[in-house]
Length: 204
Image 1 (tube, rainbow, N blue to C red):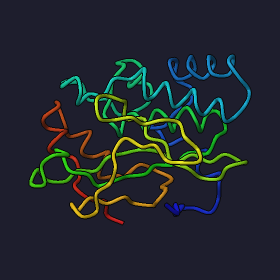
Image 2: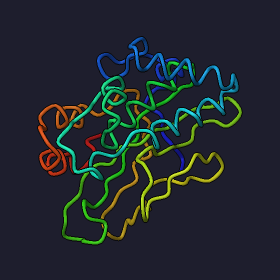
Image 3: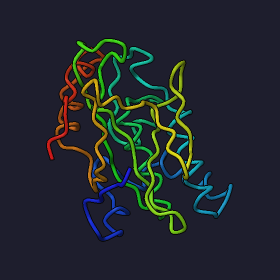
């Protein structure tokens, strides 16, 4: 897929977005320090950040949890979050490491096996490396039937998009997360509210 960046200024994809993307909170700094002690190579740093967001943070829908996390610090504190929260964490870590990162979305069925289950947005990230350009990563978290990997040459995302079922793979790389998504997260007080209250499509 040919990705479409919202901004031509790469610096826009390195900035903080308080209170969602903030670099100097305690747990974020702890993760950043650990990554930096492992490697100075940007590709390897991006891979480690991705694995933290994908593997160390449990997906709230899988847990059927009543906890709703939004920003990176809270996600790390609770060790859980939905796809949007995980993408906020990954963007925070990457941007703080000097690796440009943006926000991407897909429109998927709430129940992947039921065409009548309705649609909801799914959040993921795009990353820029000098020797590669833009590519997408999905920190959703793996489980049976979901196998998302750090892959540069070939996308290995959480969900295959079935356009014949009405699903949509948006090519946009946004500087900021969707306001509609953030609003739905703030308004949700448990798993069911957030599962059913997520936006069903992206308003471009």
